[in-house]
Length: 288
Image (tube, one colour):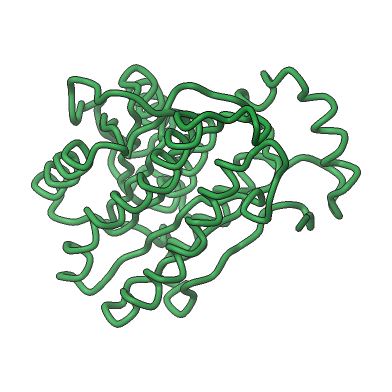
C-alpha cells in the first residue's frame, strides 16, 4: 500500500480541490468497436459506466474491462490530465470512453458531474467507486488530518457517488454499483484510517444492497489484496511487502489490475442480477 497525497474523483488515488472542468470530452469510439465479452456479443452494450479514480492504473483496467464488454465508459478523476490521458488510451483501443473531472469529497462537484452525464447520456447503469488513497502512519503518529482525508476520499466519496446516481437508477429500476474495498478492511497495522474506511465501505455496501434491492439495483464490493500497480511499485518497502504477500497468498503471486477488473465486470453484468451485498475477495486466498 502506498502513501499517496493525491485524491481521485467521484478508487483509487487522491483528495483535494475540485479541478475547474467538470466533464471534458476526449473523443469517443462506438460501443460496437469494443471486443465482444461473450460469444453472443458484448453483455454491456448500450450501457453507461462511471469509474471513479479512473485516471489510475486500477481505474483504467476497470474501464477497459467494462468497455470491452460494450459499455460506454466515463473515467472520473480529480486530476484532469490523468483522466484525459486514460480516456484517450482506451479510445485508442476502440473503446467508447471519455473523461470527467470531479472531487468525490465535494458533494456539489459529484452532483454536477452526475447531472451532466445524465443530461448527455440519459442514464447511468454502472457505478464503480474506485477512488481512494492511503496515508500510512502508526496510530500514535496519525494526526486528525491524515485520518479525515483518507476517510473523506475512500468512505465519504463512495457514499456521495452512490447517493448521486441512485435516483436515476431507481427511476429506471436497474443499476449495478461496485465498491472497491480492500483486504485491509480486516485490519492492517499502520493503516488505521484506511482499514476503517474500507471496513466502512463493506458496511455501506451491505446496507445499500438491502435498501436498493427492491429497485433491481445490486450493490457489491470487491476486496483486492496486494495488486501490483505503478503506484504500489513506487512504495519504498515494495520488495518486502511483495515478498510477504507472495508467501502468505495461497496463489503465490501478486494480483494484477486485470484480476480486479474481471471481478468488477462480472458483478456489473446483467447476469449478476441475483448477487448483492457480497464482498468478492481478489486476494489470492489471503484473508488476514
